[in-house]
Length: 357
Image (tube, rainbow, N blue to C red; front, side, top):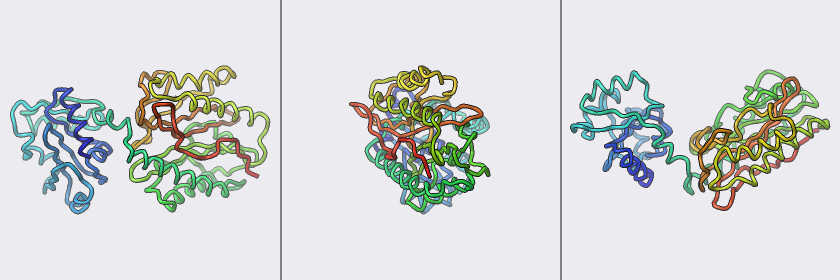
């Protein structure tokens, strides 16, 4: 934690800020370890102070590292004027503009009129982009749990079972296998609904001959995994095999190409060109992938406009898809770790088309 706060202080110096008010809970967790639902972290050039309420009095003793802990008897923002870090004159303090509401910003100006409040963007998030060894271990653990859950849930994929029942089974088995919880609400989409990239599980029952898309992931100690597999109930038709093989080819080529120094749009183009050449470009309407970590959708973006450069330690998804309205769709998604020489797959589930008899 101390190293992370040290890196943030370097950012403060670069931005000519005296301190940063951190209110995003994910960023607070990253910087000091707190996993609760109410907290504020102040980081200056030589000190860090964490505020939370009475409910977390015992929890913070075990979790919070690298910051002085205060448990005020009043609402957290109302307590800010009592903190020494904010009592000086001409203090230039940053706040996270994506997470602080305009109402709270107005309160800050009223409570602390001597402070110059400056909106900042992605100061902490820029640190989150590359993962250290401990973070990678947690993502890998989440991936291993997800792979086990996938194998266990396959037995429930049969005609007559509801999509919503499969979704519930995924979430239950994630926890049973050691996950903290589901990284997001699982997507279970069968038949014509598989052409909907983000279809929520419904009361529709699975039918023989249909595609079934499962998009899910475990969370482990705050870090997440994101996997998608598309299977067929029964024997696949020639057209189903053709579309599946196309998506698999697009994904495989992207995995083989991903490396440090590549820009997000360049990696996206690798897959997109393959799908375009086959004549299905209008059926691939989303980006190739995104970063993951404490967030399911993190930087870098892997899409047609992304100028972000891939760096060692980044963990990204690679998830091309083809979605044909009135017929169905295929998506295959894996998580990979960017290395100096390429990338390493973290999600070890067979990627060949599975026909479930």
